[in-house]
Each structure stands twice: as C-alpha cells, then as structure tokens.
Image 1: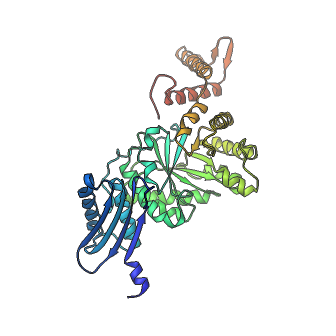
Image 2: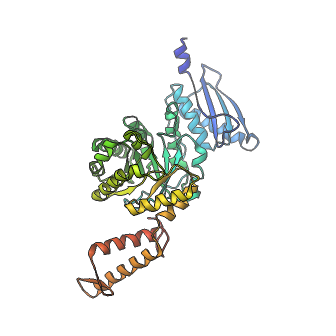
Image 3: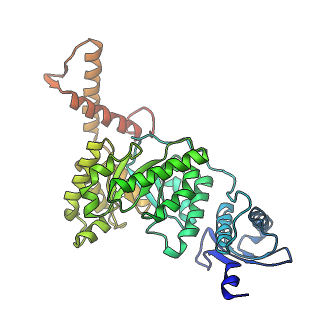
Length: 408
C-alpha cells in the first residue's frame, strides 16, 4: 500500500493536552477487520465512560465504518463536541458518512430574528474552541459570533466548520442572536454549505469589497435554504475592511434586502491604508462616518468594530459613546467583560428617554385630536423629530430601560 493510501485511511482532529478544557482529541485508523476498537482516556471515565463509548460507537455507525481503531483523549467534551471531533477525523480519513452525522437538536428551535433587532454587542467566539461556546449565553450579549475566519488556524478550518454546525444545533445561547462569520470568499461559500442548514440568524462576510460579493453569498444562502427547507430568514452583515470596500459601501449595503447591517474591521482597514491603528481611532473616523452614512441611506444598521484592549474599560466606554454619537448602533466585543460596558455606552441617557417619551406622547395626543401639527410646550415638533423619538423609545424599551417588551 502506498504512503498516500495509508494516509487516506487515517485521520485525527481536536485538541489534546492537560491545558485543554471542554474538548477532546480523536484519531481514527480504518481497518479491514476486527470491528471497532476503542481506546479511551478521559478525566470523567468513572462517570461517563459508558456514555462516551456509546457516542463513539454511534458516530462510527452513522459513518458506515465497520472496522477501525478509534483513540480518544477526552478533557470534558460534551457529546456534540466529541461527535464533531470524530466526524472531522473521519472526513480526514476520506470517509463519507452513510447516514446524517449531525447530533440530535437540543438547542431551542430557530425562530428567526428581525431586521432591526437590538445589536449593541456581538461577542466573538473562536470557531474551534468549544469551551467558549457552551456558556456564552450567560453573559447576555445581544449576539454571539461563531467565528470561522481569523480565530481559526488555516489547517483547522474543516474541523471548525463541523464544530460550529454542531454548536448551532446543540447550544442554547439564551436569546442571543446567532451569527457566523464565514471565511473570505470563495472559501466562505463552503462554510455556508455546512452552517446555513442549521438556520443561523446572521452571516458575517469578511473583506467585502463589492455588491457582487454580497450577491454571491445571498444566492448561495437562498439556494441552501430552499434545498434544506430553512424557513427562518438568514440575514447578511458585510464587513468592510479595505479602502475599496468603504468606497463601495452604499452599493454593498443595497445589494440585497437580506443585508441588515454594515460593519467595519479597523485592523485590516488601517493595514490597507498603511497607517497605525490608535486607541482614539482618529485615522478611521472618515471611513466609519462614511459607513454610517451609507448604512442609513440603505436603511440598515451601522455596527462599529471591536475595541482591542480588554483591560481598558474606560477607553472602551469612551469609544462606544463616540461611536453612538456618530450613528453606530453597536459594536463587536472580544471578551465577555466588555459587554456590560458596551451596553452602557450605547444606552440613551434618562434625559434623552424622557424627552423622547414626551415627544411621542405629544404626537399621539395630536393624532387623537385630529391635528396635523405636533407641539410640545411652545415648540412645534417636526416629523423627523417624532420618528427619531419613536425609534429611541423602541430601542430603550428593547434594552429594558423603560417598561415594555425586552429584546426585539
């Protein structure tokens, strides 16, 4: 047997070592006989050894593999993680599953999200690190981003896809919008094939530079939705990370009605400009303002980039306050401790809320009296002011700052 043939009959995936948590390493060596031989080491062997072996056997059955040596080093992996690692190892051994390899859905069924829902905070979760996914919802971000791009080593992209797919099926993110950042096109189209059947709420597309990039993603998503019977909407959020992307912001935002927001990646954008990124962000003010204007012109949300210094909460707060003043409605975050600060930064003041409530009340009073003019005290209120007040009240109510319904 050639070396290439021998290599094709074996595969491994996952992480191993004492510092690994909530993950495992799995190796599969195909054989010509002897059934399924399992070598398992686990720190929870006494409690869950029987269950782990049953999961391994079931995964091999789905794969249609009758004979193999399976080795698993477990560091507290939950079943959907173990199954993802085994499936990735099997794929690397050139095995095509004979039955649906996906674990049973244990997460709440997808309900879909609205175009204008609250998106103040989006917590990035590395797509190949299950330990960050399992309890992410406890931190109460408006959204979680299961990341297949920058946080995943190129050699692990295939394994991360399977892990993210299983997470969408099995993790309860407790009301957070479920986003997936795919890879730059064309690799990102392969990511869509894996994750769109699980009905994520939003697909983040990195390094978008033209409306055509968005249209490619939209076409692939809609094709998969139709084929797999996905009934909930799958929205698109392009990430602009270059000078060309910023120049084409309006066309990108207007490419399809499934675009719900534009966001910017300042690290790549400043690299494209050839300038250093500063904590104050003065070098990106023009680009961020242009993005906000394009987003508003297209009727979608403008979402700011991340703030990279996790320890600098004062700097984060100041950045967020400035971003809100520019017209942004939220930003990304790379650590759970940033969520609370971001929510504070994007919250309207009590004075703003009181003023907006008064404007809305005056509008309803004028409507009830059949008046065509809205007045508050001695001042006439223009329609744009009323619309702005209504939007602020709706967002404040969604954020729980005034009585009413919670998140949209």
